[in-house]
Length: 423
Image (cartoon, rainbow, N blue to C red; front, side):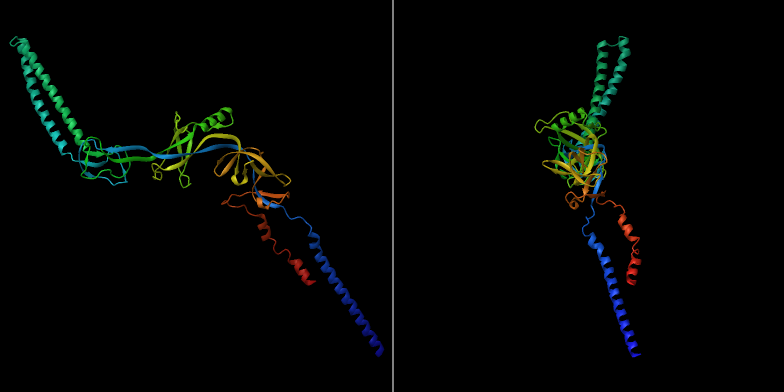
């Protein structure tokens, strides 16, 4: 009996040992299976680099020329003293807006009022003499017809009447002249606009010998912009339009002008081109152009340096690309184009003028091609890339599909994890 118990215990110990060996082997096999995928995937290629691209599309693009210029008031009036006298008062605020016919200065008008009174007295005297001469001439006419007086006496009476009429006319003219001088003593502005500082002070003698300038009034709404363009550029532009390479942007009545201020900001209101000068400045070889720009808030001041952006021509079938997409070197201009297979090639292009932060590409690209704009640093050698639509800085980016995918099935691996935990 004791021997049977010993044999049974020995058998159970050997069975437990076999079971332990089998359990360890099973765990090692499971670990080997879980470690196999990383070892097999170590030699796989990384995913393609993601680059931002724009799709080529042709359109008619206006070519903008930027020219230097200066602002000028649309109307300027030099307020001057038209009669001599002592300046008694100044009746405006310097630097303010004034309206047409507003009184600005008052010159002592007493001498001119005295002259006016004297002319009025002379007129009264001349009118009295005229009355007497007329009565005498009327009385002499029947007497001469009845041969009571000589013909010579009638002629003298009629001549005296006409002389008295001339004296009355001269007296009236003297009154009108005196009234004008009295009116000139009150100095007004001929135009509406902004007035500067007074050039004389009260008590000064003005108008003695010449018409003393008292102030300057400038109308700054609208404002003129005078700018120049080299005549060589004008001739080259006309030749391109004549050959059909470019289209005319329209006449002076339709050409719009944008103003760039000295600090680089763009003036919000557009102007219109008034005229282009017919003559060339012989000293500089420049043609002068003038534009008119609204200035209701007085932002533009006379004499400011500005740059005028003028669309003089347009090119059909041109392509607009962000400036960062074009590589400009001494050997030429080029862009990076993504092919259908995801490979990137360098493509030489012909670039024209710039417009709104973009380059106008004249040739070298086809419709539908994808040009790389962003992600140049991600491209490695000849490896393929993954093109995605490029979003300009500041624009709302498109919703990322990866974000939506990662937010939904986050709990999917949970069953596998629990199964592993159970094993």
